[in-house]
Length: 410
Image (cartoon, rainbow, N blue to C red; front, side, top):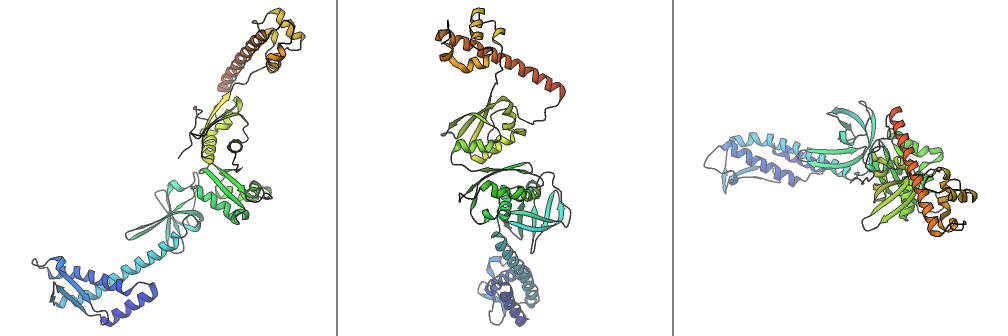
């Protein structure tokens, strides 16, 4: 038996790369525990029992301290114990090999087949192991069937006692980034770089790209001829919308690109707090914020600054004749000068209006203030009428949150 055992240990060392000394030590430790149970002597302590296995002959000797203990039962348990230890070590070695192999692939996309479903999680069969695609790492509304090929991002490799967990993700931003690296040769070659990415899985992703070569358009390279490259990625992501944006070191230009096609009316930058307050026309506020605040939230995460949104009330052109606060004589002078409505008059400003006969700079300023107030009140009335009409005719489908200050998520 001893000769067969030594041969088996040598084969394990050669085929599985498990050191014989590791196996010897494991067998000795297991036999010491077994010997203590067999002896069943209350005068013995577990710590005093030890086993020595001869490395050249395989002979086994049991000691209580320095005293050798002999028992016919020791021989019968030695073979069984050695077999169990070797099986255990083989499994540990195989897990170690798999762990090392897949640890090197963390952050990469791997392929597998859907094996089974467990409480919303998907068990994916790989070449040498099984991986888990947790429910929270799947895309919303995405369905798979057993046996279907699946691509996913290797998020983590966890080595546990007696087990090995490979965690996959299709919801991680890195999955989108790797898909672009696979589909766009310019990214794989390092000509185009993905500088930033923000994602809300299953709905929308914003990705900022930059080219090291002025002759290569970073956005065009990612989109591909007739959108072929980005279409492949969108299809893999089950229809998720992707906005490809040109990176810009100028924060003002970058913010405008990040919220495009919204046109920004003004921008206030607080570099200490890394906050940007943007102002847009009233009719573009909903577009800026996006459904459930998604657009402005993703833009904030993409640039790494908090974006706060505000809107300006669009004025309407009010007839000068309809404004009671302006006297008849002043109305006639304004009409004769070509100012029939508030829009043109406000645009002219104090300096030009004060050139009209009978209009001092103070009077011109007062007239402009009256016109601005009248135009603003008219705009508010018109907005209220539109709101009532919209409420009566259709449900709100914009999904915009009531707050205009949307902070980027962590």
